[in-house]
Image (tube, rainbow, N blue to C red; front, side, top):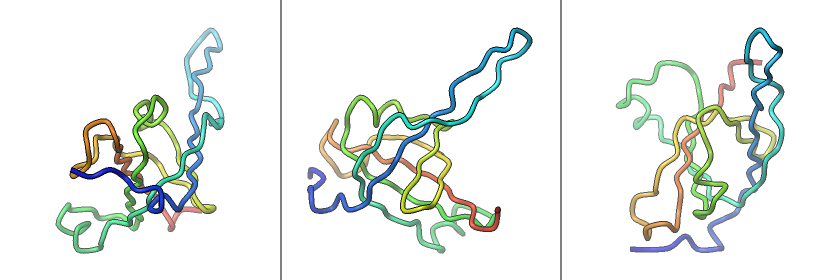
Amino acid sequence: MATLAAGDLDRFVIIKRAPVVDDGISRNRGVPVEIGGRWAKKDDVADGERLRAGQQAQDLTTRFLMRWDSLTISIKVTDILECEGETFEVVGNKEARGYDRRSTREITAAARPDVA
């Protein structure tokens, strides 16, 4: 098994989470606020891989590999990642395959370039 090398972490990712706002009638998500940032390795999913997965929409699916810590394991599908001016919606968070246990998290996220 391997560990994530420091030299591979070449992108800074800002993690944002929208707090739940209770107005007395309903509970809604508020404006996302920054809860932290981490260095990551960015790996865009290949078009052929997207076709095999049956994805139809024009989106950019990306895997962010980050070191395992209390923040990275808490990233949820309701969170937002910002990297190099692009906004990504989190699709999944799992232990990265091929790395030591509790060393690396794989955060899968999608950006929609066709949506303004």
